[in-house]
Length: 392
Image 1 (cartoon, one colour):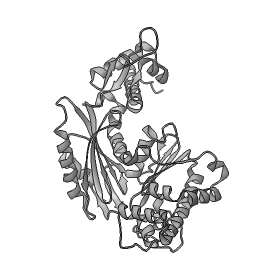
Image 2 (image 1 turned 90 degrees about the vertical axis):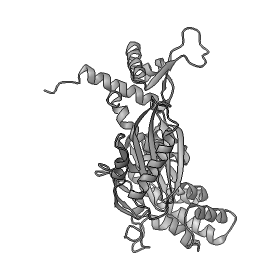
Image 3 (image 1 turned 60 degrees about the horizontal axis):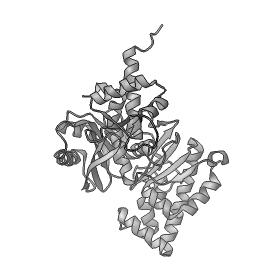
Image 4 (image 1 turned 180 degrees about the vertical axis):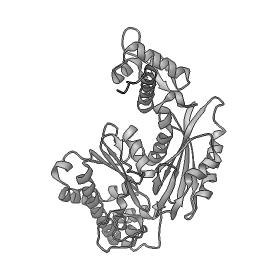
């Protein structure tokens, strides 16, 4: 017969639960923690004292109270002292940020990323940005790790980018390349759509929703999927590659090598090609296209309308498969959604099953372009939140 958890294991689990609550929800009174975690006041007091002693939270009186009597102490994450580095490697740029416990962006840098830049060249540039930010960090501050968001299929166990069709990466060891430059901080690599979905679920537009699809567009298209409050990443971490659903038999050739993938109808290249702008590329070119469509340019309007119809087609399939409460459109999918909401909704209404459609909401990211960085930081914070006493 298997023995139950020990008192020490229970205490560590409770410490993690309390720290996670404060990390996600911000400053919280002891009374609120007692209610949220189902623990008694003395246990909450002991747990917060232990976390405060470790420098992870602080306690103090509320800034204001309209109630009579002694106010409940407020527990706050030590955002300035406990932090993670977050990197986002995108098609045309790389971003680095220092993000404090509680999801607070403390500092950030942005770097150009020439197309064709490989992991061995990208890693020192990102490490250099982190070193620059490190100059403003207090001597007693604690870095708990580094999280990386990458456009591509990422092998969960070691951060190897197996395939990044839009970046030209094949078996690029970005996790190992970064680890060689900073062996003291654990490094976790994830797909950009997946980590952005987790960020929006934890503290963004999808807070309170347990079933979410986050569609992310750059040059290609991917999705982060939350089902039952859990990230759906697949066996090796390659789940969510919805841009490579086949939607047209023998359609346009995709950069993955197949034909008729969804992103050949809604991705950057498809939009610009259909608008007669194949020589242009990048988000600025797409924004110019959407602006032209808004001003009545016939060819631009037709391209946007067709892409919106295909976007609704694919979203309807995803809604039928996953039955989400919310679909969020991020990256260039946000711009396409805003430019073609009517054909998207029309196609969705025509193709989605009524039972799956009746409660789904379509939204843009609350965290905006920070979703990928905040989500990457969440990867780094996970070890701390799982066992606050095991990180040092």
